[in-house]
Image 1 (cartoon, helix red, strand yellow):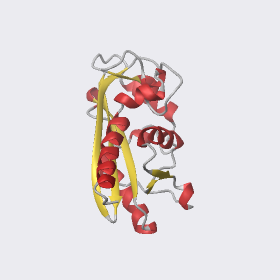
Image 2 (image 1 turned 90 degrees about the vertical axis):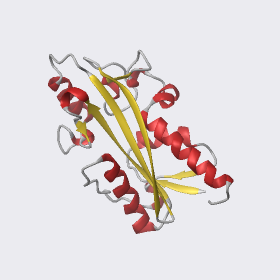
Image 3 (image 1 turned 30 degrees about the vertical axis):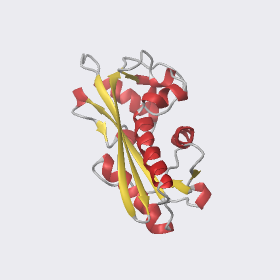
Image 4 (image 1 turned 45 degrees about the horizontal axis):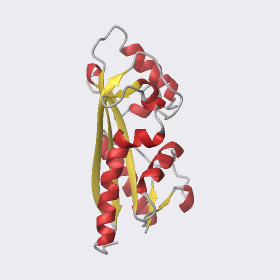
Length: 197
């Protein structure tokens, strides 16, 4: 079956392709000639994922899914949360976002944080959401060159390395996006087995 992943983020697309397997033909927005700047105007991660998925479904009538992810830092009352991508401004600079987080956590001992991903799947106009969460902490400085976003300063409780120091296959086993995607894949495989797709 064909399924569109409603993202312009090539890093996310690469990660999901590694997870989703061969039973699904994953299409990008470019594959369906969509160059739109898809809106993300909601106040929650769940709302943003839903808004993006339904934007594609309503415009193209193609089965699709979208995700939204937030980094939630305990000492910052859950910030940056739904504003993670544009925490330091609308230019969505990962470097500036990281700098702002590290600056706000200066002299703060509680560095507990978690990543949360919500995937919104829309098939034939019906929505199902999947959640993935990984608990960890914010490091005091950047470590590693891989990954994207806040990966260089986030260390999962299940690893002694930052996400940016881990090979993608290892990161996918424990990451928020990996966990949400696994639930998505399990659900899709169940539909395929029941010949509902």
